[in-house]
Amino acid sequence: MRRINRNQGQRGAELVEFAITLPFIALLLLIVGQVASAVSVQQVLSNAVREGARLAVVPGEYGQTSEVQNRVVAYAAANGITLAASAVTVNQNELVSPSGGACSATNPCLKASRVSVTYDYPLALLLGTNMQLGAAVEMRNFY
Image (cartoon, rainbow, N blue to C red):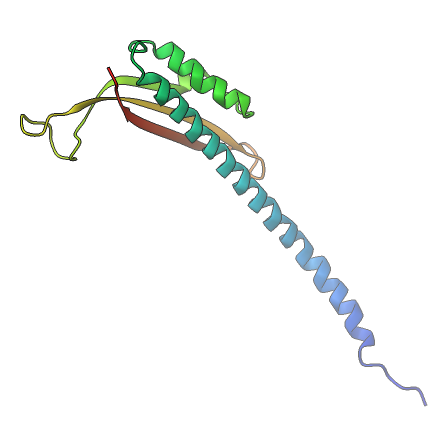
């Protein structure tokens, strides 16, 4: 008499299950990688506008918006991101209330510089789709 092995049919089923789930696991890993890359780009953009804002608030840099834009573009380029100067907005005459309310005689506003950037991040998994990333920093002027 032949003995019937009950696990013999299970090996084939496990292989089929693995073949079915493998594409989903691979897609999940690709999506996680894409999100991690987008977070990295967002961090570089935040640091780039922070560098631009630091330059914008220094005495002697008032009205030098092109220098501020160039600093932001150069920082992004050094980290592998190509930005156009037109994507960088510089406002060195922003009024900011230190206590958060409206500006008045009892609550005088301070002058600040605001530097912001927008960037279209290409999503490789969704062909032809871009995700708009941006960052903005506001710092009090020293002039």
